[in-house]
Amino acid sequence: MQDLIIILNALYELTEVEEINFAKGLVLSYEDGNDLGLLKNGAELAFSENNATSDFLVSDRFQKRGDLENTYLQIFLDFLCDNESQVTLSIPEFRTLMNQVAPTEDQKTWSFKDLSHSLAKISSASDRFYLLRESILGINKDKSKALSDLVKFANFSKNSEALEELRKALMHLPNIKDFLNYFLKFLNLKTDRPVFHDLRKALSDIDISILVPALSHGQIQSKKWLLEEWSKIQDEPIDMSYVLGGWLGILPLMHFEKSYNLSKKFRNFDIDPKAIQFSERICKHLVQDDWKYKGVVMDLYEMNYELTEYETAKADGSMEKFVERADVIINTSCEHLDDFELWLSKIPFGTRLILQSNNFFAEPTHVNCVGSLQAFKEQAHLSDLQFSGTLDLNHYQRFMLIGIR
Ligand SMILES: C[S@@+](CC[C@H](N)C(=O)[O-])C[C@H]1O[C@@H](n2cnc3c(N)ncnc32)[C@H](O)[C@@H]1O
Image (cartoon, rainbow, N blue to C red; front, side):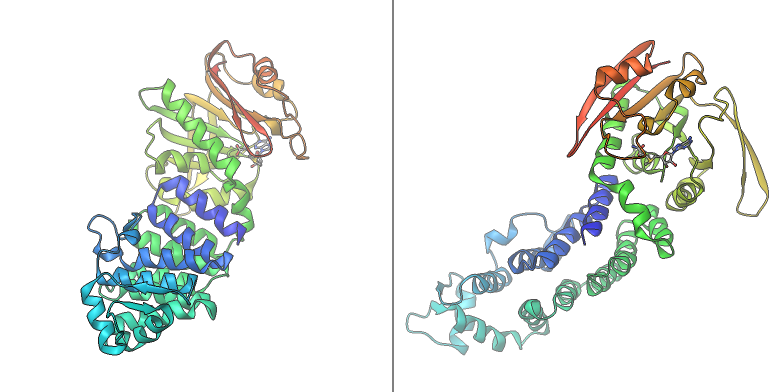
């Protein structure tokens, strides 16, 4: 499940779609066996239809107990906390209902146990509350079903196709692949963002272990940092950026998903055909949009950076030839280059470079780590340095330089 949390975190960072955070809450609750968290998340979902602006409540509405429905949930919540305690109901409408099924002397105080039992009778009058009650009481028996029922409850009056997919996703926990299949469909229906459709298709026949390392916290934060710092330096979008050793194409994807508008097009030159193939699948909507993204299998030591020529197969099977040149060259894989100086010597003078390296010496494929930002500056010896900085990550530091070769 840790992999699923990494993927959900990264999806949120890439798109800032709030539903992803919500689902993460449900998944974490599921994993932790945290009934209260689950219930709270369920409650937020359940009452989402009352919110005019969003389908999902992120507010503290649950605390307000302003209406009858919230009171039901509050009682369940309290019941799970301590079922020996007494509760005084403040809402007259609910007191009346309770007094019909379980009259008490003062007509306003009940034990949680009484409330819970009575609620069953009240609930049966309404399919909606019955479903809610069943799902909450089912939490300790079958978590997937309970989560799924909560979504069904939320869906009751909305009959939303998207929520139905979320429900199916939750039914499939803890199977990550099946969960993602339905969850990405839900996100695509909900937000109409093609990235979710492409990712779902790509994951249908590829193991998620290919995706997870590229979406780790460190990788995602490093790309976010790069785009932030780059945008402080450049006002107008350039025509073409090359990303070298760009792996699964997450940087260009994040650029377009977060509407940075720094570069009209990106090319990812990577030596690994599997990575390029996968990147083209998850960025398919960008490939098809006038080649905003293109992955190319190429060795960065073999490239001609004055004019880069390559061919690619089009959807109809015919070949298209590209002859291109970059306005900016990005290399966030400097730690992987066994002959950094040789590579640098191939870059035309005057080219803007964005470079990242790190001091994560423990990774065997990191053959060119640097110990400090100063060491990286000396290695890259840029003629005009526009940015230099260090990002502290969990187990290592990432260094970045932006400047002119
Ligand atoms: C682990 S990944 C990327 C890590 C990096 N921090 C990033 O996300 O930018 C390193 C990538 O560099 C690619 N690579 C290594 N040597 C290369 C070369 N000579 N030419 C092109 N790509 C290369 C690998 O195939 C891999 O996809």
